[in-house]
Amino acid sequence: MKMKFANLQGLALRLCAFTFALCISGRGINAADLPDVEKICGAKNMEDLAVIGKTRWVIGSSMAAAKNGMPVPNEGTGTLVLVDRDARTVQSLTPADVGTHFDSNRFPSCSGPLPFAQLSPHGVDLRPERDGTMTLYVVNHSKRQSIEVYRVDARGKKPTVDWIGCSELPSTAFPSGVAALPDGGLLVTSTYDQKDAAWKESLASGKPVGSVYRWDKKGGWREISVGVIAGLNGPAIRPDGKIAFVSGWSEGKIYRLDLAHPERTMP
Image (cartoon, rainbow, N blue to C red; front, side, top):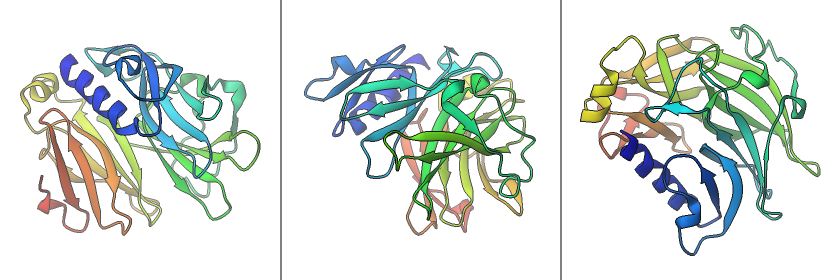
């Protein structure tokens, strides 16, 4: 499984190499070893990245230390990282850098703020808002399995980040990636079920395990695809919101998921 994660990290780095590459300390392929790319060093355990609109800024997740290639729920924390592509700098955010403005109307089921010092991030996604800000969705494994939500405002000299809410997944889920839907909902991949004692063996052998969850404000979370794909991760949404693409990284495939008819999942 360590090799599969190394391959995944290498693939992610090569996909973003047309813009820049991060010199990552930790497991997997180091960006410093990749030829002919622009390198920005200083990030640790980077998992996911999102460009903040048309600005020079990128925000990403610096994962907590992992065991056997996977972050452990409720053990250890990471942080969010701001990358300035022009200045070639990396800043790991601290609690002093992140405000709290709980939008309970938008997230009525959220039990309250998660202290930023306790964040254990995984996948991220950004969605532009009409007022010029962006909403950042962050998969979290600390204290609760959740999507932590932040408002990112990059209209000034430097982006500001404020926590505004959350959506808590079933406690047995292990979310890995998140994607915002055009209707305001969310799509999340859960790599495995924490009640499944054989999840490591299933992932190592390429056996289907895990679920795709969909969330909306009215209905909350529901599973729309279960036990079809091995090693679910990395959702991406077609602009019309009808089709999602998810990775089965432990079997080396990309799947097309019809959101209206999730039973029609196909590689």
